[in-house]
Image (cartoon, rainbow, N blue to C red):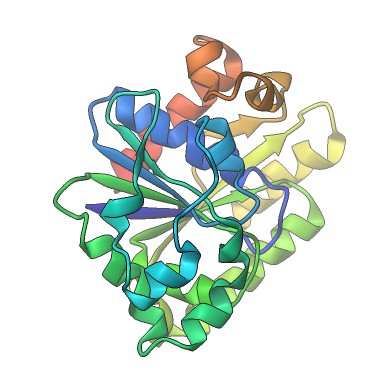
Length: 248
């Protein structure tokens, strides 16, 4: 089982849309997929038409009173299940601080379902915290959406520095960056697409555009390819998943 976390220190960069659409792409290609919505805002849960509530909340999970398998919900799509968000997860840092091995907690919880899934997507809130470090320890790779703007690139660099300076936390973690919410009508976006690729040739080739179809996910409560197959945005996520899957 591979664990992939959609993560960025900065919010509003397309993490949830990435998790939802890539999970759908993987599922329709035959992978057994689990999406765990770790963001207390519950956007991924909303997109999958699932109630954002976990009995006992995050405390029951972290303490071991409940196991992950007990709270998994089926989605509308074959091969795709969801661990819904719960508002108590806003206190995940505090819950982890009270546990014996905080960095190992998410990995331990995921281990119980390793035989059931090929892929797990963790949709993470924007932060750099104890909860983030637990995600880093649990994940095989971070999928990092990067908007071609100065501030978004700056947070990507901050993440790079954290990974380099904290090997005991991240262990063997692959950081996979790609451009998200790209508007080629903007000169700054076009220029930074070129400039950053020269500095970071490891960035993926696939680019997610800033396009209305992705915003309409909230109206349809579906992945893009489910309600708008064949569109530019659906093709972009398909290409992104193909590239990520090849890298894995």
